[in-house]
Length: 293
Ligand code: CAA
Image 1: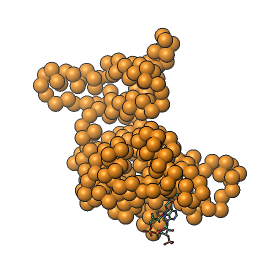
Image 2: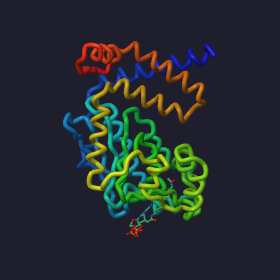
Image 3: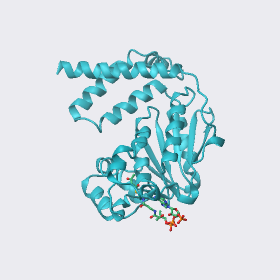
Image 4: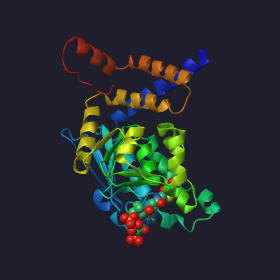
């Protein structure tokens, strides 16, 4: 017991150290939007602290080819290191968030090529991002597109969004979390139905299932996602990162271990200036001025 608590305390301390280091880094130069083939990105919001990454491969309904996933990873690397960015929004077009992995690219693959080339290994980057990521889903989020949305922390959907895992109709199965993340979110019966039929579900159904946290008119979707990012950005980036890690731990461990991790992380916040500032500001009836320390 004592060992687990020690391990968890050590992990929380490590997260604090990494986060503190990151907040000291200055933004690095990275490929400008003009250099990117498959996506666009910009920094927006009143305080210019929310990054919006727009998948931009319209002719293929944003099918997630290797090039697109590499560009997404690079862009996330840069925004993760940029201390001025509090949250990241990933979106697509009105017709498609993403219609899945690129079937045409995968079609000639053999089993050994998949293994030797470590197919889909680039995809884990999104789920490893330490900053909050909001998926703003309009149109199709199918296969890898639905999986990409589920790798994000929060999903907002446009009224006409459609989610699904249609891999079964292609003679394969989801390969980037569809059978795992979806099952944890919506439960076995619904996940089975979605994965075994390949049927699409509407935004309203997805919201009912807890896959999506809000359904919005399509033309307001990205703005609302940015507002959400801005709201998160009013808090300490350091503590947001710890909180995200604690919620994600709920997916990785037993309830008892998760609760211990949460408590130790809560205790660890008492070693930060931002915790001191947050509580002092409350007592002094003034807004908190967080410094990510
Ligand atoms: N890969 C490659 N190209 C795709 C694509 C995909 N996943 N989805 C759409 N496209 C291409 C189409 O081939 C078409 O290209 P051409 O004009 O060159 O023919 C173009 O995008 C427009 O698509 P449609 O003409 O099919 O558009 P539609 O409006 O009639 O239908 C759709 C839209 C229902 C989304 C349909 O395109 C579709 O079923 N797409 C495939 C969805 C799918 O099966 N996704 C799972 C992929 S596998 C996967 O993701 C594995 C994993 O777990 C990582």
